[in-house]
Image (cartoon, one colour):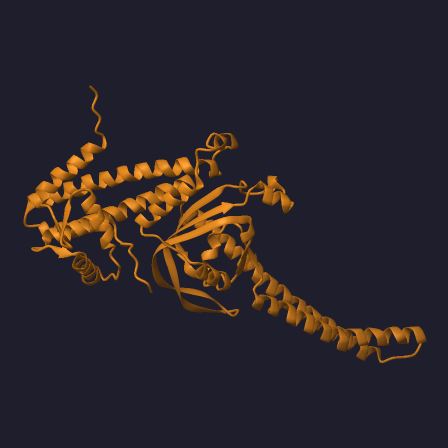
Length: 409
Protein backbone atom coordinates (compact mmCIF):
# COMPACT_ATOMS: atom_id res chain seq x y z
CA UNK A 1 0.00 0.00 0.00
CA UNK A 2 1.42 3.37 -1.06
CA UNK A 3 2.35 5.73 1.77
CA UNK A 4 0.44 9.01 1.92
CA UNK A 5 1.30 12.58 2.86
CA UNK A 6 -1.95 12.73 4.85
CA UNK A 7 -1.42 12.92 8.64
CA UNK A 8 -4.27 10.89 10.23
CA UNK A 9 -4.24 12.68 13.61
CA UNK A 10 -6.04 15.74 14.93
CA UNK A 11 -3.96 18.92 15.12
CA UNK A 12 -4.72 19.43 18.82
CA UNK A 13 -3.49 15.92 19.59
CA UNK A 14 -0.22 16.56 17.72
CA UNK A 15 0.16 19.88 19.52
CA UNK A 16 -0.06 18.14 22.90
CA UNK A 17 2.53 15.61 21.74
CA UNK A 18 4.98 18.41 20.90
CA UNK A 19 4.26 20.35 24.10
CA UNK A 20 5.38 17.29 26.07
CA UNK A 21 8.96 18.02 24.93
CA UNK A 22 8.79 21.45 26.63
CA UNK A 23 7.06 20.25 29.80
CA UNK A 24 9.94 21.31 32.05
CA UNK A 25 9.84 24.91 30.79
CA UNK A 26 6.38 26.42 31.25
CA UNK A 27 7.27 29.58 29.34
CA UNK A 28 8.21 27.55 26.25
CA UNK A 29 4.95 25.65 26.56
CA UNK A 30 2.95 28.89 26.57
CA UNK A 31 5.03 30.42 23.76
CA UNK A 32 4.59 27.32 21.60
CA UNK A 33 0.82 27.44 22.15
CA UNK A 34 0.78 31.11 21.08
CA UNK A 35 2.84 30.33 17.99
CA UNK A 36 0.44 27.52 17.10
CA UNK A 37 -2.59 29.77 17.63
CA UNK A 38 -1.39 32.70 15.50
CA UNK A 39 -0.09 30.42 12.74
CA UNK A 40 -3.46 28.67 12.63
CA UNK A 41 -5.25 32.01 12.23
CA UNK A 42 -2.89 32.98 9.43
CA UNK A 43 -3.61 29.78 7.49
CA UNK A 44 -7.32 30.32 8.09
CA UNK A 45 -7.01 33.75 6.46
CA UNK A 46 -5.29 32.15 3.45
CA UNK A 47 -8.19 29.70 3.20
CA UNK A 48 -10.68 32.56 3.28
CA UNK A 49 -9.13 33.99 0.11
CA UNK A 50 -9.21 30.55 -1.53
CA UNK A 51 -12.88 29.94 -0.77
CA UNK A 52 -13.83 33.38 -2.06
CA UNK A 53 -12.03 32.50 -5.30
CA UNK A 54 -13.73 29.08 -5.48
CA UNK A 55 -17.23 30.43 -4.87
CA UNK A 56 -16.77 33.20 -7.46
CA UNK A 57 -15.68 30.79 -10.19
CA UNK A 58 -18.20 28.11 -9.24
CA UNK A 59 -21.29 30.31 -9.09
CA UNK A 60 -22.36 29.90 -12.74
CA UNK A 61 -22.10 26.10 -12.42
CA UNK A 62 -23.71 25.84 -8.95
CA UNK A 63 -26.95 23.78 -9.10
CA UNK A 64 -28.02 25.23 -5.73
CA UNK A 65 -28.38 28.72 -7.21
CA UNK A 66 -31.44 29.77 -9.20
CA UNK A 67 -31.09 30.32 -12.98
CA UNK A 68 -31.42 34.08 -12.36
CA UNK A 69 -28.56 34.05 -9.84
CA UNK A 70 -26.35 31.97 -12.13
CA UNK A 71 -27.03 34.38 -14.99
CA UNK A 72 -25.41 37.17 -12.96
CA UNK A 73 -22.10 35.29 -12.96
CA UNK A 74 -21.88 34.60 -16.70
CA UNK A 75 -18.48 35.94 -17.77
CA UNK A 76 -17.34 36.19 -14.13
CA UNK A 77 -17.03 32.47 -13.30
CA UNK A 78 -14.07 30.77 -14.98
CA UNK A 79 -14.03 26.96 -15.27
CA UNK A 80 -10.23 26.67 -15.66
CA UNK A 81 -9.63 28.88 -12.59
CA UNK A 82 -12.15 26.83 -10.62
CA UNK A 83 -10.35 23.55 -11.38
CA UNK A 84 -6.91 25.07 -10.76
CA UNK A 85 -7.89 26.48 -7.35
CA UNK A 86 -9.74 23.31 -6.37
CA UNK A 87 -6.67 21.25 -7.25
CA UNK A 88 -4.55 23.57 -5.12
CA UNK A 89 -6.88 23.04 -2.14
CA UNK A 90 -6.90 19.26 -2.65
CA UNK A 91 -3.11 19.13 -2.79
CA UNK A 92 -2.84 21.20 0.40
CA UNK A 93 -5.30 18.83 2.07
CA UNK A 94 -3.14 15.88 0.91
CA UNK A 95 -5.79 14.33 -1.34
CA UNK A 96 -4.57 12.20 -4.26
CA UNK A 97 -6.34 11.51 -7.54
CA UNK A 98 -8.12 8.15 -7.89
CA UNK A 99 -7.04 6.72 -11.24
CA UNK A 100 -9.35 5.21 -13.85
CA UNK A 101 -8.02 1.71 -13.20
CA UNK A 102 -9.24 1.85 -9.59
CA UNK A 103 -12.70 3.02 -10.67
CA UNK A 104 -12.91 0.35 -13.40
CA UNK A 105 -12.06 -2.31 -10.81
CA UNK A 106 -14.79 -0.97 -8.49
CA UNK A 107 -17.31 -1.17 -11.34
CA UNK A 108 -16.30 -4.76 -11.95
CA UNK A 109 -16.03 -5.94 -8.33
CA UNK A 110 -18.20 -5.38 -5.30
CA UNK A 111 -17.19 -6.06 -1.71
CA UNK A 112 -20.32 -5.35 0.29
CA UNK A 113 -23.49 -5.25 -1.82
CA UNK A 114 -22.63 -7.90 -4.42
CA UNK A 115 -24.38 -5.85 -7.07
CA UNK A 116 -23.13 -4.52 -10.39
CA UNK A 117 -23.81 -0.88 -11.20
CA UNK A 118 -23.87 0.86 -14.56
CA UNK A 119 -23.08 4.56 -14.95
CA UNK A 120 -23.96 6.70 -17.96
CA UNK A 121 -20.58 8.40 -18.34
CA UNK A 122 -21.71 10.01 -21.62
CA UNK A 123 -24.00 12.31 -19.61
CA UNK A 124 -20.93 13.58 -17.74
CA UNK A 125 -18.59 15.91 -19.60
CA UNK A 126 -15.80 15.71 -17.01
CA UNK A 127 -15.35 13.97 -13.68
CA UNK A 128 -12.63 13.58 -11.06
CA UNK A 129 -12.27 11.51 -7.91
CA UNK A 130 -9.83 12.39 -5.14
CA UNK A 131 -9.25 10.46 -1.92
CA UNK A 132 -7.08 10.52 1.17
CA UNK A 133 -6.50 8.15 4.04
CA UNK A 134 -7.15 4.43 3.83
CA UNK A 135 -7.59 1.58 6.24
CA UNK A 136 -8.66 -2.06 6.16
CA UNK A 137 -11.26 -3.78 8.28
CA UNK A 138 -13.11 -7.10 8.46
CA UNK A 139 -16.72 -7.29 7.24
CA UNK A 140 -19.22 -10.17 7.05
CA UNK A 141 -20.99 -10.59 3.71
CA UNK A 142 -23.49 -13.10 2.30
CA UNK A 143 -21.91 -16.22 0.81
CA UNK A 144 -24.09 -18.46 -1.34
CA UNK A 145 -27.55 -18.56 0.26
CA UNK A 146 -27.44 -19.37 3.96
CA UNK A 147 -23.82 -18.69 4.87
CA UNK A 148 -21.81 -15.56 5.60
CA UNK A 149 -18.09 -15.16 5.20
CA UNK A 150 -15.64 -12.63 6.61
CA UNK A 151 -13.66 -10.58 4.10
CA UNK A 152 -11.10 -7.80 4.36
CA UNK A 153 -12.45 -4.51 2.98
CA UNK A 154 -10.30 -1.48 2.16
CA UNK A 155 -11.86 1.92 2.86
CA UNK A 156 -10.97 5.47 1.85
CA UNK A 157 -11.26 7.84 4.83
CA UNK A 158 -12.32 10.72 2.57
CA UNK A 159 -13.45 10.89 -1.08
CA UNK A 160 -14.26 13.99 -3.15
CA UNK A 161 -16.20 13.62 -6.40
CA UNK A 162 -16.35 16.32 -9.09
CA UNK A 163 -19.02 15.90 -11.81
CA UNK A 164 -19.43 18.31 -14.71
CA UNK A 165 -22.66 17.41 -16.55
CA UNK A 166 -23.36 17.87 -20.25
CA UNK A 167 -25.30 20.95 -21.35
CA UNK A 168 -28.95 21.17 -22.40
CA UNK A 169 -28.15 20.47 -26.07
CA UNK A 170 -26.88 16.96 -25.22
CA UNK A 171 -30.01 15.95 -23.30
CA UNK A 172 -32.33 17.36 -25.96
CA UNK A 173 -30.51 15.30 -28.61
CA UNK A 174 -31.08 12.22 -26.44
CA UNK A 175 -34.77 13.19 -26.21
CA UNK A 176 -34.56 13.34 -22.42
CA UNK A 177 -37.41 15.14 -20.65
CA UNK A 178 -35.54 18.04 -18.97
CA UNK A 179 -38.33 18.45 -16.41
CA UNK A 180 -37.63 14.93 -15.12
CA UNK A 181 -33.88 15.40 -14.83
CA UNK A 182 -32.64 15.42 -11.23
CA UNK A 183 -29.73 17.71 -12.17
CA UNK A 184 -29.41 20.97 -14.06
CA UNK A 185 -27.70 20.51 -17.44
CA UNK A 186 -24.26 22.13 -17.51
CA UNK A 187 -23.94 22.22 -13.73
CA UNK A 188 -21.03 20.94 -11.63
CA UNK A 189 -21.78 18.70 -8.65
CA UNK A 190 -19.27 18.44 -5.81
CA UNK A 191 -19.59 15.98 -2.94
CA UNK A 192 -17.33 14.89 -0.08
CA UNK A 193 -17.87 11.52 1.63
CA UNK A 194 -16.19 9.70 4.48
CA UNK A 195 -15.44 5.99 4.86
CA UNK A 196 -16.10 4.82 1.28
CA UNK A 197 -15.28 1.17 0.37
CA UNK A 198 -12.63 1.16 -2.35
CA UNK A 199 -14.33 -1.63 -4.33
CA UNK A 200 -17.73 0.06 -4.02
CA UNK A 201 -16.43 3.46 -5.10
CA UNK A 202 -18.96 3.68 -7.93
CA UNK A 203 -21.83 3.92 -5.41
CA UNK A 204 -21.11 7.63 -4.83
CA UNK A 205 -22.04 8.49 -8.44
CA UNK A 206 -25.58 9.98 -8.41
CA UNK A 207 -26.54 8.29 -11.70
CA UNK A 208 -25.38 4.75 -10.81
CA UNK A 209 -28.09 2.22 -11.77
CA UNK A 210 -28.18 -1.39 -10.42
CA UNK A 211 -28.04 -4.21 -12.96
CA UNK A 212 -27.89 -8.00 -12.81
CA UNK A 213 -24.41 -9.44 -12.68
CA UNK A 214 -23.35 -12.20 -15.07
CA UNK A 215 -23.69 -14.72 -12.22
CA UNK A 216 -27.21 -13.48 -11.41
CA UNK A 217 -28.21 -13.75 -15.07
CA UNK A 218 -26.83 -17.29 -15.40
CA UNK A 219 -28.55 -18.44 -12.20
CA UNK A 220 -31.80 -16.97 -13.47
CA UNK A 221 -31.91 -17.74 -17.19
CA UNK A 222 -30.03 -21.07 -17.53
CA UNK A 223 -32.28 -23.04 -15.12
CA UNK A 224 -35.32 -21.11 -16.35
CA UNK A 225 -34.84 -21.79 -20.06
CA UNK A 226 -33.16 -25.21 -19.74
CA UNK A 227 -35.46 -26.57 -17.06
CA UNK A 228 -38.59 -25.09 -18.61
CA UNK A 229 -37.92 -26.50 -22.07
CA UNK A 230 -36.96 -29.90 -20.63
CA UNK A 231 -40.10 -30.21 -18.48
CA UNK A 232 -42.44 -28.96 -21.17
CA UNK A 233 -40.96 -31.26 -23.87
CA UNK A 234 -40.77 -34.44 -21.76
CA UNK A 235 -43.69 -34.17 -19.38
CA UNK A 236 -46.34 -31.54 -19.98
CA UNK A 237 -46.63 -31.25 -23.78
CA UNK A 238 -46.52 -35.05 -24.55
CA UNK A 239 -49.23 -35.69 -21.96
CA UNK A 240 -51.42 -32.91 -23.34
CA UNK A 241 -50.90 -34.09 -26.96
CA UNK A 242 -51.76 -37.67 -26.03
CA UNK A 243 -54.89 -36.65 -24.15
CA UNK A 244 -55.99 -34.29 -26.95
CA UNK A 245 -55.46 -36.93 -29.70
CA UNK A 246 -57.38 -39.55 -27.72
CA UNK A 247 -60.24 -37.13 -27.10
CA UNK A 248 -60.54 -36.30 -30.82
CA UNK A 249 -60.31 -39.94 -32.00
CA UNK A 250 -62.48 -41.36 -29.27
CA UNK A 251 -59.80 -43.89 -28.38
CA UNK A 252 -59.32 -44.97 -24.81
CA UNK A 253 -56.07 -44.01 -23.07
CA UNK A 254 -54.40 -44.66 -19.79
CA UNK A 255 -55.88 -41.53 -18.20
CA UNK A 256 -54.30 -42.19 -14.84
CA UNK A 257 -50.74 -42.30 -16.24
CA UNK A 258 -51.36 -39.24 -18.42
CA UNK A 259 -52.73 -37.24 -15.49
CA UNK A 260 -49.84 -38.36 -13.31
CA UNK A 261 -47.31 -37.31 -15.95
CA UNK A 262 -49.08 -33.99 -16.41
CA UNK A 263 -49.27 -33.32 -12.66
CA UNK A 264 -45.59 -34.17 -12.21
CA UNK A 265 -44.66 -31.76 -14.99
CA UNK A 266 -46.81 -28.98 -13.58
CA UNK A 267 -45.44 -29.53 -10.06
CA UNK A 268 -41.88 -29.41 -11.43
CA UNK A 269 -42.71 -26.21 -13.31
CA UNK A 270 -44.10 -24.76 -10.08
CA UNK A 271 -40.87 -25.62 -8.24
CA UNK A 272 -38.86 -24.06 -11.09
CA UNK A 273 -41.02 -20.91 -10.94
CA UNK A 274 -40.44 -20.72 -7.19
CA UNK A 275 -36.68 -21.02 -7.76
CA UNK A 276 -36.74 -18.27 -10.40
CA UNK A 277 -38.82 -16.07 -8.09
CA UNK A 278 -36.25 -16.61 -5.34
CA UNK A 279 -33.38 -15.64 -7.67
CA UNK A 280 -35.21 -12.50 -8.76
CA UNK A 281 -36.04 -11.71 -5.14
CA UNK A 282 -32.33 -11.97 -4.29
CA UNK A 283 -31.62 -9.34 -6.95
CA UNK A 284 -34.40 -7.11 -5.63
CA UNK A 285 -33.03 -7.50 -2.09
CA UNK A 286 -29.60 -6.43 -3.33
CA UNK A 287 -31.20 -3.35 -4.87
CA UNK A 288 -32.89 -2.59 -1.54
CA UNK A 289 -29.54 -3.03 0.22
CA UNK A 290 -27.96 -0.69 -2.30
CA UNK A 291 -30.72 1.89 -1.71
CA UNK A 292 -30.09 1.66 2.04
CA UNK A 293 -26.36 2.14 1.44
CA UNK A 294 -27.16 5.26 -0.58
CA UNK A 295 -29.45 6.67 2.11
CA UNK A 296 -26.84 5.91 4.79
CA UNK A 297 -24.18 7.61 2.67
CA UNK A 298 -26.32 10.71 2.23
CA UNK A 299 -27.26 10.86 5.90
CA UNK A 300 -24.18 9.62 7.75
CA UNK A 301 -21.25 9.76 5.31
CA UNK A 302 -21.88 12.93 3.32
CA UNK A 303 -19.65 15.74 4.62
CA UNK A 304 -20.56 18.44 2.12
CA UNK A 305 -22.28 19.25 -1.17
CA UNK A 306 -21.36 21.88 -3.77
CA UNK A 307 -20.45 25.10 -1.89
CA UNK A 308 -20.54 23.11 1.35
CA UNK A 309 -17.88 20.76 -0.05
CA UNK A 310 -15.48 23.72 -0.32
CA UNK A 311 -15.72 24.38 3.41
CA UNK A 312 -15.02 20.74 4.21
CA UNK A 313 -12.01 20.63 1.87
CA UNK A 314 -10.61 23.96 3.06
CA UNK A 315 -10.94 22.95 6.70
CA UNK A 316 -8.95 19.82 5.84
CA UNK A 317 -6.31 21.85 3.99
CA UNK A 318 -5.94 24.23 6.95
CA UNK A 319 -5.47 21.32 9.33
CA UNK A 320 -2.84 19.67 7.14
CA UNK A 321 -0.98 22.98 6.72
CA UNK A 322 -0.83 23.70 10.46
CA UNK A 323 0.14 20.11 11.30
CA UNK A 324 3.00 20.04 8.79
CA UNK A 325 4.26 23.50 9.81
CA UNK A 326 4.19 22.93 13.56
CA UNK A 327 5.80 19.50 13.31
CA UNK A 328 8.64 20.81 11.13
CA UNK A 329 9.18 23.79 13.45
CA UNK A 330 9.10 21.66 16.61
CA UNK A 331 11.66 19.13 15.33
CA UNK A 332 14.02 21.82 14.01
CA UNK A 333 13.64 23.79 17.22
CA UNK A 334 14.71 20.76 19.28
CA UNK A 335 17.64 19.90 17.02
CA UNK A 336 21.01 21.13 18.28
CA UNK A 337 22.31 21.42 14.71
CA UNK A 338 20.76 22.49 11.38
CA UNK A 339 19.22 19.63 9.41
CA UNK A 340 18.86 18.85 5.73
CA UNK A 341 15.34 18.32 4.40
CA UNK A 342 16.05 14.58 4.17
CA UNK A 343 17.26 14.40 7.79
CA UNK A 344 14.20 16.30 9.05
CA UNK A 345 11.91 14.10 6.95
CA UNK A 346 13.52 10.95 8.35
CA UNK A 347 13.24 12.14 11.98
CA UNK A 348 9.55 13.04 11.70
CA UNK A 349 8.60 9.83 9.87
CA UNK A 350 10.56 7.78 12.41
CA UNK A 351 8.73 9.56 15.27
CA UNK A 352 5.34 8.72 13.72
CA UNK A 353 6.42 5.11 13.25
CA UNK A 354 7.76 4.52 16.78
CA UNK A 355 5.50 6.83 18.79
CA UNK A 356 2.19 6.49 16.94
CA UNK A 357 2.70 3.25 14.99
CA UNK A 358 1.92 5.06 11.73
CA UNK A 359 3.75 4.75 8.43
CA UNK A 360 3.38 7.93 6.39
CA UNK A 361 5.31 10.00 3.86
CA UNK A 362 5.76 13.38 5.57
CA UNK A 363 5.51 16.25 3.08
CA UNK A 364 8.74 17.90 4.24
CA UNK A 365 9.14 20.21 1.22
CA UNK A 366 5.70 21.72 1.82
CA UNK A 367 6.39 22.17 5.52
CA UNK A 368 9.76 23.88 4.99
CA UNK A 369 8.34 26.13 2.28
CA UNK A 370 5.58 27.29 4.64
CA UNK A 371 8.10 27.98 7.41
CA UNK A 372 10.31 29.91 5.00
CA UNK A 373 7.42 31.96 3.57
CA UNK A 374 6.38 33.22 7.01
CA UNK A 375 9.97 33.81 8.05
CA UNK A 376 10.33 31.13 10.73
CA UNK A 377 12.99 29.01 9.01
CA UNK A 378 16.33 29.78 7.38
CA UNK A 379 18.15 27.64 4.81
CA UNK A 380 21.94 27.78 4.58
CA UNK A 381 23.82 25.50 2.16
CA UNK A 382 20.97 23.00 2.07
CA UNK A 383 20.59 22.88 5.88
CA UNK A 384 17.59 24.21 7.75
CA UNK A 385 17.18 25.85 11.15
CA UNK A 386 14.40 27.86 12.79
CA UNK A 387 14.49 31.07 14.78
CA UNK A 388 13.90 30.84 18.54
CA UNK A 389 10.38 30.82 19.99
CA UNK A 390 10.74 34.42 21.25
CA UNK A 391 11.72 35.69 17.80
CA UNK A 392 9.19 33.40 16.08
CA UNK A 393 6.32 35.00 18.04
CA UNK A 394 7.48 38.48 17.06
CA UNK A 395 7.87 37.43 13.43
CA UNK A 396 4.48 35.70 13.09
CA UNK A 397 2.84 38.70 14.79
CA UNK A 398 4.42 40.97 12.14
CA UNK A 399 3.17 38.69 9.37
CA UNK A 400 -0.34 38.69 10.81
CA UNK A 401 -0.39 42.48 11.32
CA UNK A 402 0.78 43.05 7.73
CA UNK A 403 -2.22 41.13 6.38
CA UNK A 404 -4.58 43.96 7.34
CA UNK A 405 -2.15 46.84 6.96
CA UNK A 406 -4.03 49.98 5.98
CA UNK A 407 -2.70 53.52 6.27
CA UNK A 408 -4.98 56.48 5.79
CA UNK A 409 -3.40 59.92 5.59
